[in-house]
Length: 491
Image (tube, rainbow, N blue to C red; front, side, top):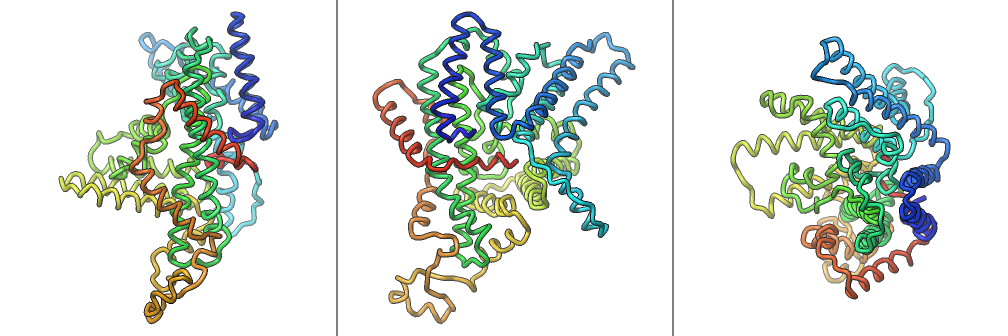
């Protein structure tokens, strides 16, 4: 079941909302909590019920481990008990990473062993369980926080809501227990708040519009350029890379908007996950704006524990590289993801070295460099194989494959002496002049316009916002012919 599907919008969501608040109105708060967990697990099982035992087992294991860590009294602990506490944490983290590695990286490891040792070990062909990367990281953070004595003891039902809450279960944001548990316990969250419902539907409609109208339009050209076309001319290659750059942004930020809007219907505030990342004027600025909750996790649970910037320049650069290589691996089992992580790690190292020189670039130039680096790096993130990435990049930077529209042949005939051709210049990606219009509109929209959270800050319950919500919601619903999955479902 997808957020952008009729069965979710018109059946699952209304029923879940009605029953949840009805039970709370009758002061059956535990029943309401249990129903929300049941609904979330039903939502998760819609794709493949075979993985329901997996998430249930993962939750039960981490709940027991977390409570065990939380009960440990650090002040009275002997050295032996402290070692035992660290051992419990180690077992918990290793078990979570082992589960993730088995499903996500087994085949990748086997393929590389076969290639290196010239063996023929059969791959397992395991299907990636939905949301495993997200709920694994979320629960690892819970274990570490329990070890640090930053959590309380919770009953299993409360913990289950924290992990399975359906608006953020599948693709985040990656939330902390301290952000969620107090909200679920707050009695005010159990009463219908019509302002939150109006605001939630407003934000949800923006996200739905981003996904259905914008992201899915760019996906046609991106998919054709990366997966179908055998060769690309210069403009097709740039249109391919930029189409994916905008598809990914509007797809994932659209999902996050929808998650935030849905959570508000239940009076729950999820953390902001995007803050106009393509406005960034440095790679560090980008990671403060893009997938903010993942950046927070990488910083708090990998970069800082490795030593952060506290152990000298060389260790700082090493820690940055290690953090972003792991970030790349988290996104997918493939060398293209590893290389994408390496690129971003190197970019952050270079930015740090550059900053120490005290030289500041003109803001426009800084943005141009940052945006183009991000766009080029996304090529490796999107490509299924190295060859796909090389195909696109070679064409992006080759001046031997320029093709212009047929309509310019009579107006610019002398260009043929420079081996510039005329023809169907975007045919390989199934594009036309409207593809260029979409790109030319998308670029200024992401660097000039307010983002959805900024727009939501000015929300008021009045006729204008009602019309705006209905307009974008109906436009998106009218295009829901075939609901397409969100890109981050693959990670």
